[in-house]
Image (cartoon, rainbow, N blue to C red; front, side, top):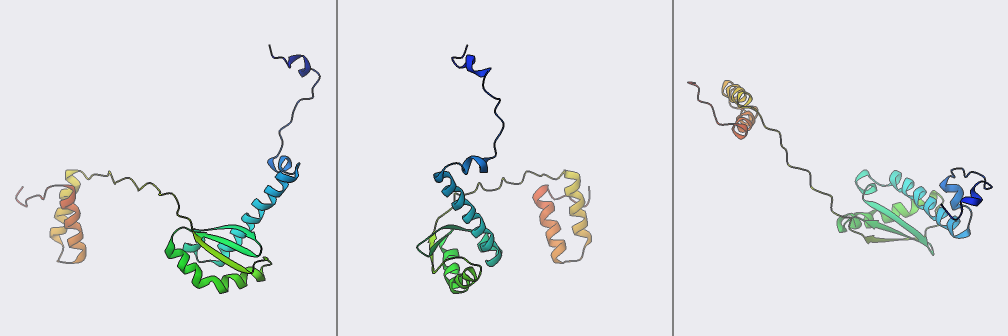
Length: 161
C-alpha cells in the first residue's frame, strides 16, 4: 500500500495539461518557450528566403547582440551562404528581425545510413524475354540498355533454344 493512499481520496483527480501551459508557469520555462518559438519562426522565414537545397541544410541559432548564427551542414553550403549573406541579411531585416550581422558556421550532421542495396531479381523467363526484345531492336541506346539489364539478371540465352 502506498504511503500516500490515505490522501488520494481527498485529492481532486488530475487532468492532462498542455505542454505550453506547463512551460508558461515559471520564468525559466517561459524564456525557453520564447526561444523555441523564435527559432521556429526564424526557420520558417529562412525556408522562404533560401533556395530549397540550402533551406534543408541550414539551421538557425540564437540571435545574440544583433548577430544571428547560421549552421550549415558542410563547408560548401557555408560558402554559398556567405555569397548570399548581404541579400539574406537585408531580407531578414525587412521581415522585422533585429539582426545586424550573420555568423556562418559549419556543423556537420550525423551520417545517414546508406540505402540498402537493391534486392530485386528478375526471373530467368523475364531475363530471356528482355534478351529476345533487345535482339529484335535495331542498335540504339534502348537496345544496349535492355541487353545490359538482361545480362545482369540472367545468363544470355542462345537463339537456338
